[in-house]
Length: 281
Ligand code: AMP
Image 1: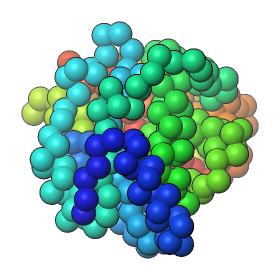
Image 2: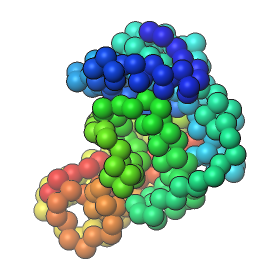
Image 3: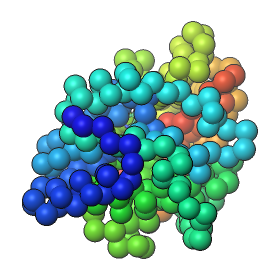
């Protein structure tokens, strides 16, 4: 594995691989790697000649008061894990290199952001699409791999790729979970012992919703109430939202039909966790 730290070198190398006829699978991350990230690499290895992973904690997608400075980082461990997983090129640019010049363009996401995490994180997805547009142009992937744990991100990035005609395929990857059902996340390190146990209630509440839907319940409000009640009874975190929406449009629905997402967000003392399940009805 080679590690590259500037976008100029990275783009040069990506161009060379394209010229040589190699297909590129791209796994964008913010590092502090865990089994969720490594699953994306595993999927990417099935269909591509070269695997490029980026590790970049993107300042643009963090709001004031969010955890940009405190976001967990461990580049040496990340390098080792990426290499073991079979990454060929690890791209770790600095913010100064990625955002070299004063900006002349600002990207604004118009759809799929007025709900879920978009509500309490204004500008977050604008930052996400900005950095991904840059990364897609630098790395020129044939396929880019995204976890469905961040389902809203996947929905927004699908809109980006469609709108701007990026010549790549987006590949969604199922959420990797701990044995308790808790979705693996870099932010889980912020949980204390008690919260970590309680946090499995997020997934269990989603499973509850799935059972209700499978048993033929059609009342969306009733399903949302059950999910909230289950979480309140089993954890002390503050519920940020529980939503049942169409996927990937992320629009309110009145009838349970087609692809739907049930998504939850909960604030614990130091961590805000999200989880979701997507069901095809
Ligand atoms: P992050 O480093 O948190 O920005 O995540 C980088 C990528 O890994 C995103 O596409 C995430 O959706 C994905 N990811 C994070 N956690 C998981 C997980 N538990 N299972 C699958 N993918 C994940």
